[in-house]
Length: 146
Image 1 (cartoon, helix red, strand yellow):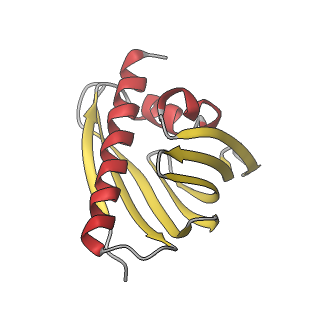
Image 2 (image 1 turned 45 degrees about the horizontal axis):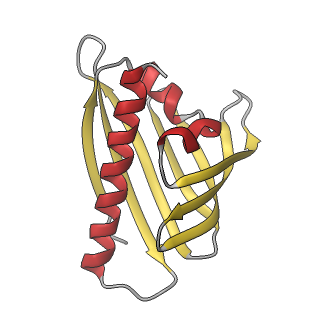
């Protein structure tokens, strides 16, 4: 089994507000930095995204990939790679846990495998940077009320 990287952050908002930002793919280019385009290709019966195409530009890494999303209750979403130009796999999840008042602990877990050879420790460092940026961006977006 591939190793994964995870990190958590506490956001000053209710889980529903946090998940509202996570599930609003059309607005990802406004707050994620690396995502330049996001297009929902398919939705489930509840109207939640099941398949999303993302155009990523992270400097040296540019990719057009499609992810399949699985929603578990109101507080968890996971994804897996459907197709990509640069990635062999991209599996991740957000798990939201209420921590009292209108506060939510968000844990982001990510496993990335690129098609080009890369040392394990460099890959895990890249995963950590991706996670930390995503969590910081999510926290800023949710807490700004945008």
